[in-house]
Image (spheres, rainbow, N blue to C red):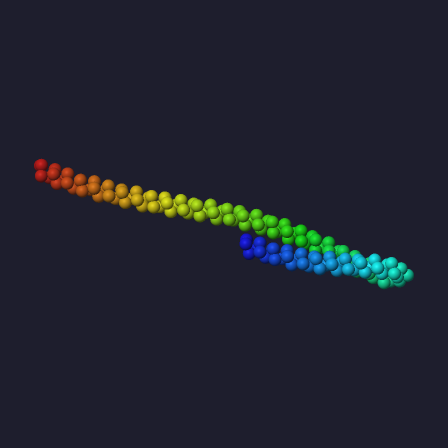
Length: 135
């Protein structure tokens, strides 16, 4: 998830740079078009050509805006998934810690039970010996 988030962030930065360049190109073409329209209104063919260039630039800018929006959403989704994963990992670590503590407690209880069994076994042997001698 972290790698995916980093990749999404890197893609988003690249798209932002591309978007900025396209926007600059768009603004340059738009400015050129306006100047051209003012100074050479009689040359319709050139104006039409620049209008097409402007329309293409506007389409490119719109596509880049849409891609940028998608990348931002993917980045947010990845960050949310990463937060859930981190939370799950923390919960798993806490559970492991509790299980290890329980294991230690069970080991102590087993050792105590073994001692008790050995003690009772000794007493049983002793009582059995006494019964043999009493008969």
